[in-house]
Each structure stands twice: as C-alpha cells, then as structure tokens.
Amino acid sequence: MDNDQSLPPGEPPPEERGSVGPFTMEEYELVEDVLEALASSEESFSVYVNVIVEKLNRILRFHALALDMPELGTAMGAASTEENSRSHIFKEIMFSSPHDFELRLPGRTIFGKALIDLEISFWGFLSFAIERAFDHTRVGLTFLKSVEKHLSARVYNRMTAELLISVSTNVHIDRSTREKAVFYLARLWEDTTIQAMRNFAPLMESIWNARKEAKVVMGTMMGIQEMFDMQIHGATHYFLDFFAEHADDDEVRGAFREFLFGATYEELAGKDRERRKKGVVSTSGVDLEAIGLSKGPDTTMRERALGIYRFFTKRKLEAQARLIANAPGPKRTAEELLLVYFIENNL
Image (cartoon, rainbow, N blue to C red):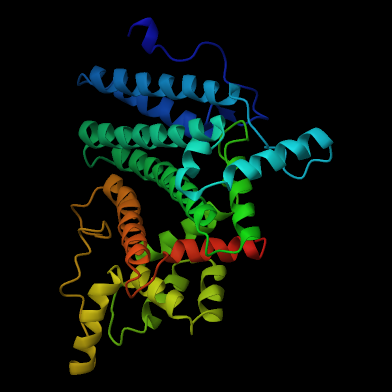
C-alpha cells in the first residue's frame, strides 16, 4: 500500500474517548479485524483492502475538517450574552426562508451531513467486500451481522437529519417545535465523534427493527396484527403510545398505514375497495421487494439496510407531492409525525 492509503499513524485516542474519528472503538476494531482477515486470506483481496483503507482515511480526514469548521449558534441555552446573541442570529438566519434552508446550514452541519453519506458508502462497501471474499462462511456471516448494524445506524442518522430538516421547514408546524428541530439539527454533529443522535435515532431504530420482522397480513386493513407483531419484536412504546393517542387523526392513520403495510396511500385505497368487496385482502399487488422490505434468502444484509432508506424516501417524496398538489392522503411520513411528538414531549 502507498503512503496515502496507510492506516492513520499513532495509537488510537485514549479509551475514555471511546472513538477513532467518527468511529466508536467497537466499529474501528471491527474494520481492523476485517482488514486483517482479508489480508491473511490465501486468495488475493488486495484491491478490497486498498479501497477500504482509502475510504477509511478519507473519512478520518473529512471528520477532522468538520471539527475545524466554526459553528454559529451551537451553544444552545448558554448563559453568556455573546453565545445567546449567536443563537439569536442563527435562528433568524434559519427561519428567513424555508426554500433555501439547507444552504443556510452552519458549516460543520453541512460537513457532518456529507460525512454520514461517506460513512454509509464505507460500510456499504465493507459489506460488499465481505460478501465477495467470504461468501456464506461462518466468519463472513459474523462480520456481515456486525457491519449491517453499523450501516443501519448510519442510515437512521441520515433519516433523522432529513426528518429534522422537514420539520424545520414545515410552516404548518408550530414555530417553537420548528425552533427545537433547528437547534437539534445544529447540535447533531457538535459532538467530537459526530454521533449525536442519542435519543431519536435509537428510538426510530427500534421501530424499524420491529417493522422489518413484523409480518404483513393486511386482512381487515386495520393494522392491528402488524402493530401487535411490532410490539412483540421490540418496537418502543412511544410508537404505540403515539398511535393510540392519535388513532382518530386521518393524517396519522394514513401515514401509519403506509408504514405498516409497506404500500402507498393510493395503493391502499385500492386494497380498501377490495376489502369492501371480499371482507379481507391479501398482500398481492404490493411490491415489498421494490421497497426493500423483502426478507428472502437472496436478499443481502446490505440491501435490507439500504431498503429501509428507499422505503422511507419513497413515502417522503409522495407525501411532499400530495402536499404540493393538495391531494388526498398523508402529507407527512409516520416518522416525521413521530419526531414532532418526540420533540414536543421532550422525550
């Protein structure tokens, strides 16, 4: 390997920091183990090793640049006049127009958002290399299980950032909630490990883990079976509490039906007509494969993790289209509704 692709010099940071750049010690040690296994294999996997190391070093350099970026108004709730003034300036800039919101994000936040994409690319390639090099061996499957966990975490982080932007720019949401979303967005990468989704991302992860395991039945289209399955598979009680409190709200019911059944509002309207004719419905005509929710034997762990994001993006874009066209159906995703609930209740 050439000098540009060598691993970072020196010892990892002190254990009390528990991180190497944006990677936790657990993540960094996993990468080292994969590299060691690839390098010691009887077959030549030098190409994979070189690309992994190159991507790793690029992320570490990018992380260092992110930490060097000056941050406007990050000392939220600080007592000093100067820091409070910075927060006030930050708030005024962010709320001047919802249409160029992302262009006004502080520098470190912009870097942090890009860093998450680099990390998703990194963990995705690591998964690809393991699949190619170790196939379905015990070592390979062990590595893949760990890599999927970290890849999924980055996907949840990216979704959380997108949700915060959606809440921040939605003029129909209470301004105080939008302000909290803006400040939370600004703080996401203030932490030196750029792992600051400490509350909502794990909450969303529990919901999505349960969603991946829950069986889609449809049946009477009430979602009771699916909700029960999600509870069995560990969905946070906040999800169930929120739905119970807002079960009579058409917006909430429509968004959660999309989430539970893996289908759009329009597709579910067709299923409703089928239910009225037959009493019950089947999953036929709902393409779970296309939205990444397939759990078949040929679906890679990487694709299952990325499928979460595809399904989320599909529903988000369709909700935005309904909002613009003032068309029937939910104008926000279930995750965005849950995030507003999360913020308003200081969970």
